[in-house]
Length: 230
Image (tube, rainbow, N blue to C red; front, side, top):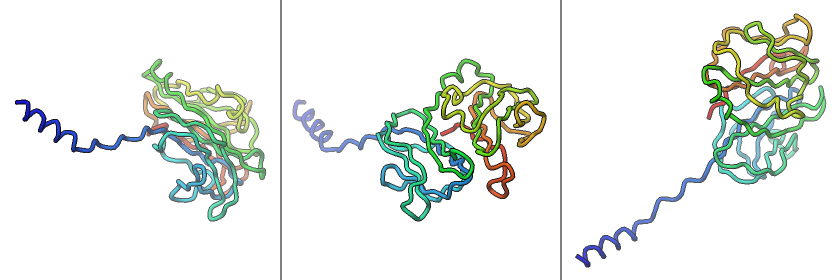
């Protein structure tokens, strides 16, 4: 019996254990700087984007990457020209982050900022749809946000969420969202809208105003929706 036990022990020791699965962190990128060029994304000095990011483009979901400390750099596609950068920060496992690229002002330089996304509040009202709103049109003045014809946010300014962290939190809205409108603050002038929005209950969404007032093509003023999902 002792000999058999020793043989089993020896066999088990000869099998290499599977390599550990690296802990992942989750990152979403929103390139909402309308006058910036197409960019490639680098973690430190390693290119991680497969295709160039054009103004107005966002990742469709969070990207799972190895946790760690690194800088996120945006370089003009095909060159080493730095357009914007989030300096080296720690990205922890099982946490979610949004990288927001925006113009400081119309025709001005681009900047990038990181937000840590918090979904803990979604459990408080499980029958609701959650939203937050980013104003990313550098030549558009203050706006009001309407959901189902009800004003839910007032006097939002360009890139104000970069200065006020509370504006990056997800808030509960109606359980059924049919229409979303952005109007000039204090007026009834609709500048961007989405009808028949297909938003899911107990999910979180970033609503964002992008482009330029008077813009055309990809820089046309419009409203976008990004579901927070991995």
